[in-house]
Figure (cartoon, rainbow, N blue to C red):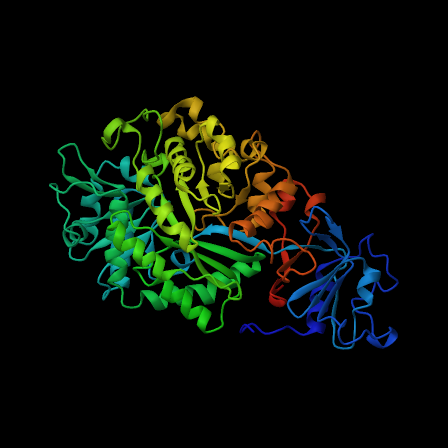
Length: 579
């Protein structure tokens, strides 16, 4: 039993009645009353008596054999009936919580199989800066942050765009040095694929003009070859690791952010299952999740994706990852995934591409992006970790990175795992059918406005007009029979699933149907988390992870879908959110 307490039936009924209106599907004689007095009905046997009964709903099950229903009956934490209002009456006793949905829509609980829940809400990140600002404005912002945190060993911030630094007349390094010369400063760029640091941070990390680029990273330099304060991809990750490990209260900040903000807000959005797509096990992230689970405070099903450190010795890392594996279906917390980066991102020119970029900012060999993990090295990890039971969540943005990830799976996988490639911005058309052929899950994010077709031309200066078409091609993937999941990558994009659904059905020419989008957020994502036999659809025998929303999405426009509100969220038969 989780710490979240059951809300009384009368309060629930009042909330539902206030937020809803009658519907044409309310055919029962009790349809105008939120509850039916148990004394007026024949009492069911103890074996048949339900814990909760939902009637008069527009229930979309995501079960192809029975797509729609009026009623759902729950006993303890399991669904025991999906059917009509009349059938549900037989399960109502004096102890049953009977909720008249009054025509509202019920769906399986939403899944988000790619987000960063600990990083996104933790106060271990002490301050934020504007995405766009002048050098002087940044100096003022960072100096002010330093004054607000006078005892912090490192000052850790977030929020700028890489283009702002690249277009700045002043040296990014000089700007931070002027703001805070005596303490190390590190600021994460919005995508997390670069860090902005001052000279003190470089010195503590042992980086100088003579340093070489680390695996999967680039040390930004000026025209004279001196470090300019921008650390790309894994070069920045390594310095952020130092900064976070210096924070004595980072674990507590992560913990509080999770229980006080993240989980309640996810439940409020109808989300009942997530994958942490970058569990930094050297920062104590695993211990934080285990603490929440041990304290019985989880209100989500969680699969952790242990971060594969690119610069770590393979044998050491493989042994450690194997020792951390946990997969008990009876528990809410699983440690059964590993997160790999194949490449970087387009806007940094670090996404791995078949053909060179049109701009050459980083002087990389061939100007075709970089690899965190090569194809050969990924194959080594597949062979080593699949027997343990791990599934891989593989970051792939450029067509070369995606191609190499597919090659590695084709060459080295045992064919029984459920690996997925995530982001999928530029895909070689020849690779589209390979997802279905190899059983690789295609995980995409479309909730961010930057993924809309109107933003595609922004990449033309870097990759040309031909490659800038059909970015994140979810329609092409589904047309090629790929198993598609939709996720958020929060906090890069909002985790609200209704924004993702709205964008998914409206981003022509790469739009999909609403039914496909809902399946991507529910049953397909449950499959990616190896729990589709237990949740992901509303079927007899499955667990009661359910969400009630204020409108029928199938009768709504894209803009109306975006504005949908959750009325109630249930996890394992318990109410974890009630509006």
